[in-house]
Length: 290
Image (cartoon, rainbow, N blue to C red; front, side, top):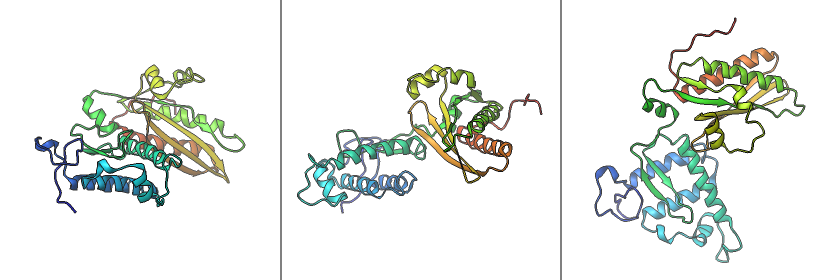
């Protein structure tokens, strides 16, 4: 194995001729970042993606990144034989696209606070290693960087009832209303009214355009499923700037008392979102009648 040489912010596979210390990325740093990526929830159960990413990173660190091609990857990652024809079998190209998407999702959520990123440019299998000293470290950091008087804007979209009998539309609607109320109490959160959100219902617009029209940075969306006296609520937080889900979680409660379920789920979701989005400890006065 070659001795570890420092790498440029955008990997060349060779020692940089000139760069400041802050721009240099060592192979050890890259391998440390690779370990974090592979241990994340995005890759922990994706064995083939793990093999793919590990191979292209290690080959590039060893100075062989320019030799990476579909034939080599097909044989090394997917155990194809010498008869493998990439023109007929597109598995490498397809999985490369999935790998790029997984990396984007990782760096939009779990890996947002890292100073190094591993990227695989479209049309190539040779990764690039980039240092981001001023990298956005997620919603909470983004809010802190705006200043003490900054706000975080978001909209709660109508939850979908995916139960077989579609018998929990009212519960889904109730959770949304309660969630909007709880989030609106946080002093530095600006929550769009449900009326404004519903005004866009049925319009064919993507996440970024919807965010622009509503003037928000994040969307909260979810679904409700009830089966065997239990209610499962799946929540997702979407970053308007990237279009990616930055957080997702499932909540499960016994469904004996719908009102209790509504309140417990709404509180759990609101508390988690408040922590992730950088809520202040102070809240607005609750004017809702008791």
